[in-house]
Amino acid sequence: MTRSKTSIALALLAFLASAVAYAQPISIADARSAPAGTVVTVEGSVTVPSGRYSSSTFDQGFAVEDGTAGIYVSTAFNSGLRLWKRVRVTGEVGDDGFGQLVLRPAATTDVVALHGAQPVFAEDVATGDVGEGTEGSLVAVEGTITRPIVNDLPYGYQVFIDDGSGETQVFIAASTGINPFSIPFVKPGRRIRAIGLSGQFLAQNEVLPRFRSDLRPAH
Image (cartoon, rainbow, N blue to C red; front, side, top):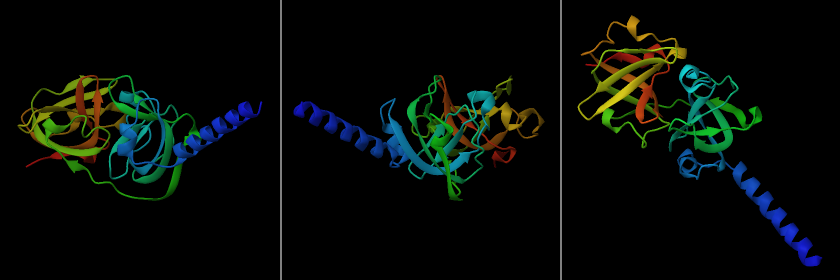
């Protein structure tokens, strides 16, 4: 009986220790490297406001970045988080079902707004480098529009650009309110600059603008 009680006590202590460990924030880069199903806590600044991509992600999530990496947080609930707000998130690391790594909180209490805000600046990357190495982070790409704009409503619009290093898609979610057909410089053959979340849908890497100001002509 003594050995049994001791074993139970040790097991309980181990469980509590692991629970405490999960509650301690780790870098988003480390979270992205964790095995699928791992529960982690991260802190960072919001780079995509809550619900901005709802028409393409089918949820009310947001994106967060901490200087080491970024990740999309997939939630059925809208946390009301605005751009650059500091936030702590606890959730399970896993695939969103379409090829993108995401963090899934179990409850609204797993998303905690912190004091203050901190801007995150988009990293300039070549169109051919948009992929696993940039996924979840805020990036900026420039390139020539290589194809006619595709109306993919109700999800959004497909714009393909290339700077000579390889083609990538700029996917404009309908829920952002951006209509590329109403933007004079978004036409085949024109060179544009796009800022947005580096994401993935199935085999297609993409950059998802958040606001109309994320699209501008490039020179």
